Image (cartoon, rainbow over all chains, first blue to last red; front, side, top):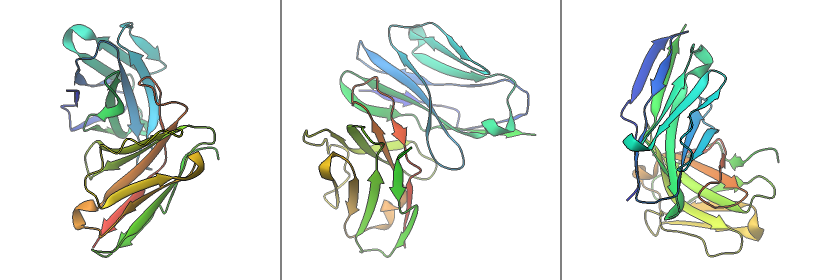
Length: 114
Length: 115
Protein backbone atom coordinates (compact mmCIF):
# COMPACT_ATOMS: atom_id res chain seq x y z
CA UNK A 1 0.00 0.00 0.00
CA UNK A 2 1.07 3.55 -0.57
CA UNK A 3 1.10 6.13 2.17
CA UNK A 4 2.41 9.64 2.77
CA UNK A 5 3.03 10.97 6.25
CA UNK A 6 3.51 14.60 7.12
CA UNK A 7 3.98 14.46 10.86
CA UNK A 8 4.10 18.23 11.36
CA UNK A 9 0.55 19.50 11.54
CA UNK A 10 1.53 23.14 11.97
CA UNK A 11 4.79 25.07 12.05
CA UNK A 12 5.17 28.68 13.08
CA UNK A 13 8.37 30.64 12.56
CA UNK A 14 9.43 34.23 12.41
CA UNK A 15 10.18 35.74 9.03
CA UNK A 16 13.71 35.13 7.71
CA UNK A 17 14.10 31.89 9.62
CA UNK A 18 14.78 28.68 7.71
CA UNK A 19 12.13 25.98 8.00
CA UNK A 20 11.99 22.33 6.93
CA UNK A 21 8.79 20.45 6.21
CA UNK A 22 9.06 16.70 6.56
CA UNK A 23 7.56 14.08 4.28
CA UNK A 24 7.90 10.33 4.71
CA UNK A 25 6.41 7.91 2.21
CA UNK A 26 5.70 4.22 1.80
CA UNK A 27 5.42 2.40 -1.49
CA UNK A 28 6.17 -0.97 -3.05
CA UNK A 29 6.53 0.47 -6.52
CA UNK A 30 10.00 0.52 -8.05
CA UNK A 31 9.11 3.55 -10.10
CA UNK A 32 7.31 6.29 -8.27
CA UNK A 33 7.02 10.05 -8.17
CA UNK A 34 6.97 12.50 -5.31
CA UNK A 35 5.35 15.90 -5.43
CA UNK A 36 5.05 18.99 -3.30
CA UNK A 37 2.09 21.33 -3.65
CA UNK A 38 1.39 24.63 -1.94
CA UNK A 39 -2.14 25.65 -0.93
CA UNK A 40 -2.31 29.35 -0.03
CA UNK A 41 -5.36 30.81 1.75
CA UNK A 42 -7.03 31.31 -1.62
CA UNK A 43 -7.40 27.53 -1.77
CA UNK A 44 -5.90 26.72 -5.15
CA UNK A 45 -3.23 24.05 -5.05
CA UNK A 46 -0.01 25.12 -6.75
CA UNK A 47 2.49 22.59 -8.05
CA UNK A 48 6.02 23.11 -6.71
CA UNK A 49 8.12 20.12 -7.68
CA UNK A 50 8.08 16.55 -8.97
CA UNK A 51 10.80 13.98 -8.31
CA UNK A 52 11.12 10.48 -9.74
CA UNK A 53 12.45 7.57 -7.75
CA UNK A 54 15.60 7.24 -9.83
CA UNK A 55 16.82 10.75 -9.25
CA UNK A 56 18.09 11.40 -5.75
CA UNK A 57 19.81 14.64 -6.53
CA UNK A 58 18.77 17.45 -4.28
CA UNK A 59 17.14 20.36 -6.00
CA UNK A 60 17.28 24.05 -5.29
CA UNK A 61 14.96 26.67 -6.71
CA UNK A 62 15.57 30.09 -5.26
CA UNK A 63 14.77 29.92 -1.56
CA UNK A 64 13.26 26.45 -1.91
CA UNK A 65 15.21 23.21 -1.72
CA UNK A 66 14.26 19.57 -1.60
CA UNK A 67 16.15 16.65 -0.06
CA UNK A 68 15.16 13.24 -1.43
CA UNK A 69 16.60 10.26 0.45
CA UNK A 70 15.44 6.80 -0.58
CA UNK A 71 17.30 5.20 2.33
CA UNK A 72 14.93 6.89 4.76
CA UNK A 73 11.96 7.17 2.36
CA UNK A 74 11.87 10.90 2.88
CA UNK A 75 11.37 13.91 0.63
CA UNK A 76 11.82 16.96 2.82
CA UNK A 77 11.25 20.54 1.77
CA UNK A 78 13.26 23.48 3.11
CA UNK A 79 12.46 27.15 2.77
CA UNK A 80 15.43 29.40 3.40
CA UNK A 81 14.94 32.94 4.70
CA UNK A 82 11.19 32.47 4.97
CA UNK A 83 8.80 35.25 4.03
CA UNK A 84 5.23 36.02 5.08
CA UNK A 85 4.04 35.09 1.58
CA UNK A 86 5.25 31.54 2.21
CA UNK A 87 2.42 31.09 4.70
CA UNK A 88 0.27 28.27 3.34
CA UNK A 89 -0.53 24.62 3.73
CA UNK A 90 2.05 22.43 2.02
CA UNK A 91 1.19 18.96 0.79
CA UNK A 92 3.49 16.11 -0.11
CA UNK A 93 2.06 13.54 -2.52
CA UNK A 94 3.04 10.25 -4.13
CA UNK A 95 2.11 8.40 -7.28
CA UNK A 96 3.47 5.27 -8.83
CA UNK A 97 3.09 2.63 -11.48
CA UNK A 98 0.59 0.69 -9.34
CA UNK A 99 -1.83 3.63 -9.35
CA UNK A 100 -1.92 6.97 -11.08
CA UNK A 101 -3.92 8.82 -8.48
CA UNK A 102 -1.92 10.99 -6.17
CA UNK A 103 -1.74 9.78 -2.57
CA UNK A 104 -1.63 12.83 -0.33
CA UNK A 105 -0.20 13.58 3.05
CA UNK A 106 -2.40 15.44 5.52
CA UNK A 107 -0.48 18.66 4.92
CA UNK A 108 1.61 20.97 7.07
CA UNK A 109 0.29 24.42 7.84
CA UNK A 110 3.16 26.89 7.74
CA UNK A 111 2.76 30.23 9.47
CA UNK A 112 5.39 32.87 8.88
CA UNK A 113 5.13 35.73 11.35
CA UNK A 114 6.45 39.17 10.41
CA UNK B 1 -9.43 29.07 -20.30
CA UNK B 2 -6.19 29.91 -18.59
CA UNK B 3 -6.78 27.62 -15.64
CA UNK B 4 -9.16 25.06 -14.20
CA UNK B 5 -12.45 26.71 -13.42
CA UNK B 6 -14.92 25.42 -10.86
CA UNK B 7 -18.43 26.59 -10.07
CA UNK B 8 -20.00 27.50 -7.82
CA UNK B 9 -17.23 28.59 -5.50
CA UNK B 10 -19.52 28.15 -2.52
CA UNK B 11 -22.69 26.11 -2.12
CA UNK B 12 -24.92 25.81 0.91
CA UNK B 13 -27.61 23.17 0.66
CA UNK B 14 -30.12 21.51 2.91
CA UNK B 15 -29.64 17.93 3.96
CA UNK B 16 -31.35 15.59 1.52
CA UNK B 17 -31.09 17.88 -1.49
CA UNK B 18 -29.11 17.05 -4.62
CA UNK B 19 -26.19 19.23 -5.73
CA UNK B 20 -24.18 19.55 -8.92
CA UNK B 21 -20.62 20.82 -8.99
CA UNK B 22 -19.03 21.86 -12.25
CA UNK B 23 -15.44 21.71 -13.46
CA UNK B 24 -14.09 23.26 -16.64
CA UNK B 25 -10.57 21.91 -17.22
CA UNK B 26 -7.69 23.50 -19.06
CA UNK B 27 -8.24 23.25 -22.78
CA UNK B 28 -6.47 20.26 -24.27
CA UNK B 29 -6.07 18.39 -21.00
CA UNK B 30 -7.22 14.81 -21.44
CA UNK B 31 -7.23 13.78 -17.79
CA UNK B 32 -9.60 15.17 -15.17
CA UNK B 33 -9.69 14.38 -11.46
CA UNK B 34 -12.10 15.08 -8.62
CA UNK B 35 -10.84 15.21 -5.04
CA UNK B 36 -12.49 16.00 -1.75
CA UNK B 37 -10.77 17.91 1.03
CA UNK B 38 -12.33 17.92 4.46
CA UNK B 39 -11.39 20.65 6.94
CA UNK B 40 -7.74 20.31 7.97
CA UNK B 41 -7.29 17.13 5.98
CA UNK B 42 -5.41 16.03 2.91
CA UNK B 43 -7.04 15.28 -0.39
CA UNK B 44 -9.23 12.25 -0.91
CA UNK B 45 -9.40 10.89 -4.44
CA UNK B 46 -12.91 10.50 -5.83
CA UNK B 47 -12.83 9.82 -9.56
CA UNK B 48 -10.78 10.42 -12.67
CA UNK B 49 -11.44 10.55 -16.39
CA UNK B 50 -8.91 9.95 -19.13
CA UNK B 51 -9.95 10.62 -22.69
CA UNK B 52 -12.66 8.25 -23.83
CA UNK B 53 -11.72 5.49 -21.40
CA UNK B 54 -14.10 4.31 -18.72
CA UNK B 55 -13.63 6.51 -15.64
CA UNK B 56 -11.94 5.21 -12.51
CA UNK B 57 -14.68 5.52 -9.89
CA UNK B 58 -12.84 3.64 -7.18
CA UNK B 59 -12.74 6.62 -4.83
CA UNK B 60 -16.41 7.49 -4.79
CA UNK B 61 -17.56 7.07 -1.17
CA UNK B 62 -21.11 5.91 -1.90
CA UNK B 63 -23.63 5.45 -4.69
CA UNK B 64 -24.97 8.92 -3.91
CA UNK B 65 -21.92 10.27 -5.72
CA UNK B 66 -21.62 10.24 -9.49
CA UNK B 67 -19.74 12.18 -12.12
CA UNK B 68 -19.76 12.58 -15.84
CA UNK B 69 -17.59 14.30 -18.37
CA UNK B 70 -19.25 15.47 -21.53
CA UNK B 71 -17.34 15.69 -24.78
CA UNK B 72 -14.07 15.08 -23.02
CA UNK B 73 -14.17 18.52 -21.48
CA UNK B 74 -16.52 19.84 -18.78
CA UNK B 75 -17.26 17.55 -15.86
CA UNK B 76 -20.10 17.53 -13.37
CA UNK B 77 -19.95 15.89 -9.96
CA UNK B 78 -23.40 15.12 -8.58
CA UNK B 79 -24.17 14.32 -4.97
CA UNK B 80 -27.66 13.02 -4.33
CA UNK B 81 -29.51 13.22 -1.01
CA UNK B 82 -26.69 15.19 0.58
CA UNK B 83 -25.63 14.43 4.13
CA UNK B 84 -23.78 16.63 6.60
CA UNK B 85 -20.66 14.51 6.24
CA UNK B 86 -20.54 15.53 2.58
CA UNK B 87 -19.53 19.03 3.68
CA UNK B 88 -16.05 19.64 2.30
CA UNK B 89 -14.14 21.44 -0.43
CA UNK B 90 -14.41 19.61 -3.74
CA UNK B 91 -11.37 20.13 -5.92
CA UNK B 92 -11.05 19.44 -9.60
CA UNK B 93 -7.74 19.01 -11.41
CA UNK B 94 -6.70 18.37 -14.98
CA UNK B 95 -3.54 17.28 -16.74
CA UNK B 96 -2.30 16.46 -20.22
CA UNK B 97 -1.97 12.80 -19.40
CA UNK B 98 -2.78 10.57 -16.54
CA UNK B 99 0.58 8.89 -16.18
CA UNK B 100 2.09 8.72 -12.73
CA UNK B 101 4.60 11.46 -13.47
CA UNK B 102 2.13 14.02 -14.71
CA UNK B 103 1.56 17.14 -12.66
CA UNK B 104 -2.02 18.18 -12.16
CA UNK B 105 -3.40 21.69 -12.27
CA UNK B 106 -6.08 22.45 -9.71
CA UNK B 107 -9.09 24.71 -9.61
CA UNK B 108 -9.96 26.78 -6.56
CA UNK B 109 -12.56 24.32 -5.44
CA UNK B 110 -16.21 24.37 -4.47
CA UNK B 111 -16.89 24.68 -0.76
CA UNK B 112 -19.98 22.62 -0.03
CA UNK B 113 -21.83 23.08 3.23
CA UNK B 114 -24.74 20.80 4.05
CA UNK B 115 -27.00 22.18 6.78
